[in-house]
Length: 203
Image 1 (cartoon, rainbow, N blue to C red):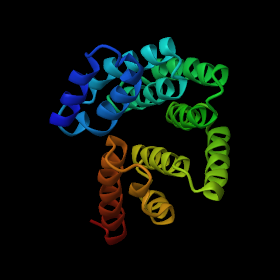
Image 2 (image 1 turned 30 degrees about the horizontal axis):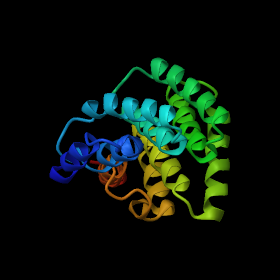
Image 3 (image 1 turned 180 degrees about the vertical axis):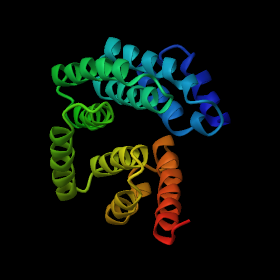
Image 4 (image 1 turned 45 degrees about the vertical axis):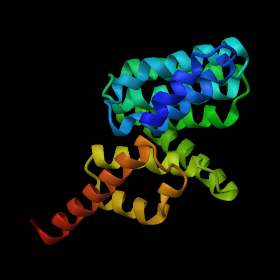
């Protein structure tokens, strides 16, 4: 985090505004979650999004917006309020032609809807479709799908399905290294194996 703080100090120098969104995205997504509550990153990520739009850095702006949306979920914001923000964010991604970031929002939105009991079958179809496409291109979208599917399985205590997912997904850490998402995935992965073992042994 000392390096993150140093980067923020550099941003205060004249002429560094063009690096604001990227710096906020990197520090809040890869550094601060190790030492600070996730909630502390929500406001900075919103700033990164807003500044990015102001300076025309739409890609990094949308990275910040995606990060903020996932942090809202992981910090326990009510699902109905998250759904409203996700739907608005998806519209922004469409307008800015940020296709990959829009898919990351769609993955989270589909998971939120499923947790709320809304269009569960359609949500599964959407996630499976994204997963199939991502498998062909080997990008990190497949990791995002695996992360959110595991969240849903654990929530509904579908332990064997969770273990099957983890085994099929492979090492998602290769695609999401150093992020909070992969830390949480690792915890849920261990929990799924433990609970599946307990269920099979009759504990």
